[in-house]
Image (cartoon, rainbow, N blue to C red; front, side, top):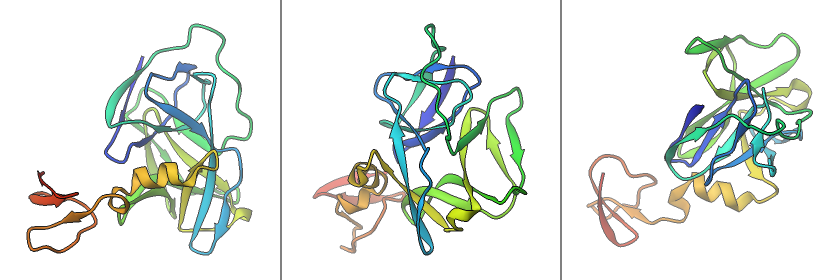
Length: 196
């Protein structure tokens, strides 16, 4: 079994050497379509894995409520093979594997949060991909966008709203100023006092 934690932005990446059952409450997506670039940013469309199994050696984007989920090995045939998946990953005995800058004319992106927006952000140097995690590798011919935001099955509102809670939540500090994200302290969120 492999444990994977989905954080406050309700997304994570996943990769395993064996086919794994997708736990209840989690949706898994692959990226088989080249991103559409638009200057500094781009959009990459994610396609849901609908048969309940992430195939062996297949990188995936996960969506679910904030929690730690247990992925059990699939007992039936290993899911539908995904061809052309742009999500790659590492699963091994070490804590992480170092991914160097590609020499094949491709660009690597890692899932992270910047300015309250979750997305895949370009890495211009090597980086560590941790055990059972994935990263995005895009052909250079598709551009060099700084960030790739994602749509899941052409549903842009589904994941973007989940990632950027401030767009649907009104948050104010005690001085009455609207803020984008709750830090440590007391805030007014949708009219209610919230302590973090």
